[in-house]
Image 1 (cartoon, one colour):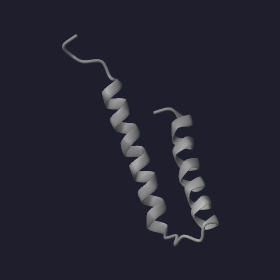
Image 2 (image 1 turned 45 degrees about the vertical axis):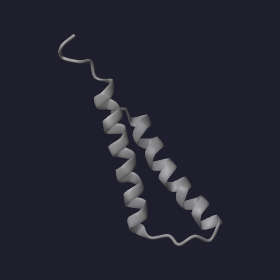
Image 3 (image 1 turned 30 degrees about the horizontal axis):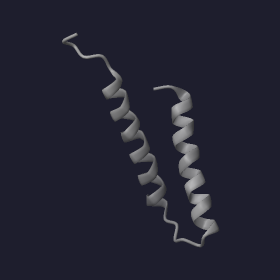
Image 4 (image 1 turned 90 degrees about the horizontal axis):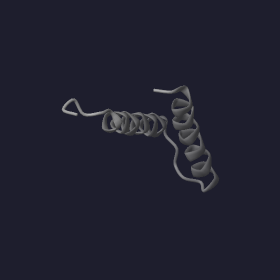
Amino acid sequence: MQLGVWIGIVVSAILAFIIASFFNQPLHWYLFILILFIGFLLQTIIMILKTPDENE
């Protein structure tokens, strides 16, 4: 996984918290971890789907 993807996921999670605090939404530390986990999970799925098939 490239470093830019990691930085993008972390920055998007931070940006989500900044926007949520701007609109006075409740912020909890576990939501930040959940956002990061889901981002890395989606990126892993994308990487798996991009790999070439063994049959080809």
